Image (tube, rainbow, N blue to C red):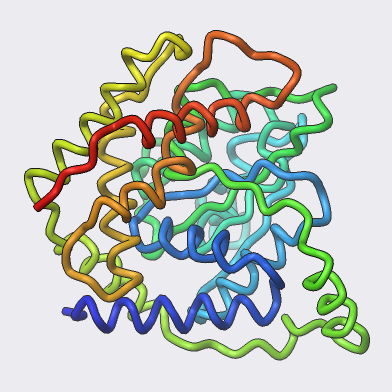
Length: 316
């Protein structure tokens, strides 16, 4: 089993390697790696062209893993994701043809453009780490990590994910525009060829599996557990929130805090770890009472930040 210091070293290598392709987004990259090590999935709510697909492919190359991209459209069927049984006339029997879900890293591009039935097929695979086709269950290879994207600008012809489904994503993130300096570096880095083409692996899939198992051993003291529950309880009692965080969100906050601590090579969780991951883990799990002219995710992030600021921090 991996030691926590080895987990921190491996995470640092992956983050540094992805930073060679995605400029000026070190914090967001660390969130992605944290979600991977926590055994969760990520929803990227962002405009086109900010590097979402490149980030996913860079992650896959960094850990020497398989990567498949699924373009979600209104006519996409569940079988287009999971696979089908087709009749092979030569062998005179039905043969299973695996869908693109049978890989390590799945890019679910514009997930809100397909029907709820097809969205549910993907979310079942995310939650159970298995796919059921014609009554037969097929396990998915670990690590299995979904990076789903949606465009917050265009709403025509879309099927927004309901709260029960967004709750299944460990984190909701936004890359956003790069800083001016980083955008100049992008021009320099991509002037001849893409850095993604020459990106080499820094670890293997088996190393990531061991890291995921090791993250579960990160200690969470009774005081930290109380702190996590206090934050979650505050979301259910806050007057600005109509629907608070579910128990699944409580567990997600603990898992993400463990993974964040592990990326620093520590075998215990600090209050700062909980604070660091609280907004991306919790902001999409609440429904605020007032949804003004600003985007919901921004409003929710402000509310979660206020709860963090007003919740007493445990002192050992």
